[in-house]
Amino acid sequence: MAKILDRLLLFLYSLCIGILSVIAILLLSGAIPDSYEALDRPEAYIAAIAVAVILFLLSIRFFYISLRRDRASLPSVDQRTEYGDIQISMETIENLSLKAAGKVKGIRDLKSRIRVSQAGLEIMIRAVVDGEHSLPMLTTEVQRQVHEFVQETTGIPVADVSVYIANLTQSPSFKSRVE
View (cartoon, one colour):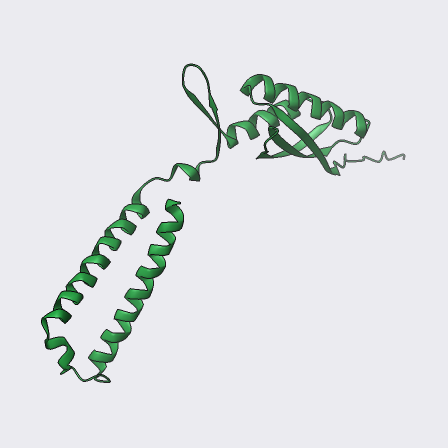
């Protein structure tokens, strides 16, 4: 709710500053005469001061928002235990899944992506294989290793482990010369 309110305030603030800038440009360029009788009344001065105070307060608010550290910018998985809260960063979970998948023989060039769903973690592994092992056996082993290791290490349920085989590594072939 606060983000929506801040966005609305930022929109109104930008609109007011834009209108005031156009008026200032027109006044300074002479397109609007500077002897305008409506500004001679005390109500106009009070309204101008009120608008200036509101714009100043909005400026302070947006300055504070720009400087504060937003906790939502660091994605993490939050858990509550009997002793307090635990936050595990998504980067940590990615590294744990890469560590587990890297233990499977025949897997190379791993990349990992994590999503959080209602059922638990959804882990996507992208890998390059050596081509010397059965692909169904390799992928099943990667899924099993990653699922068990991440779930045991973090205590967070793993809903799904997807494995994408991107390519095969090309082993250099040497031709023997016969002379």
